Amino acid sequence: MRNPFSPYLISISTKFRTFGKAIKCSSHIAHLNFNLVELFADGQIIYGAYACLPILFAFDRHTGKELFKRDLRLSDIPEINRALEREREIMADTPEKQNKPNQIRLVRMNRGIGVYKGSIYYLGYEKFLLFGPQAEFLGTLKITLNDQDITSYIDCFVILPAGRMFGLATRPENRQPIIFEADL
Image (cartoon, rainbow, N blue to C red; front, side):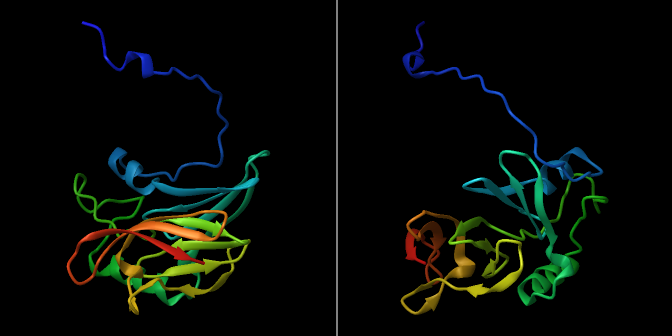
């Protein structure tokens, strides 16, 4: 029987380069969870943030050289501290040790990363955290809908070069998913 989609299948072969190293974990399941990253390409720089660890990093796209790697646990940012407190509260796992081998307990540290006009937008545990080009903390940003802060209800987002942010969120009052647009 002929595949009806076969005319639309494309086979592509490409070369790839490596950037940095994965975090060493004590189990395969932990490896998959702790090495999950959000990435954003801005010109010659690839920015990234681990989903379940408060770490920001950047690489030069052409040379593969690491530009910075910031462990936000070492900062004194209140939003990061609250997420770390949540980790302790639920006795979350670490890359080195899992409390129960097949039941990983994690706190999602970020739900996205984007760059606009040299600022890194990091959607943290409950707010957008803004960082400078070398990951120095600049402040916070909130997204409002009808004068209500919906930042903690945002699931994911993307920033376009024109300064528009699009994303998926949940309405706080009725839990209905919405696609939003915001100007930066």
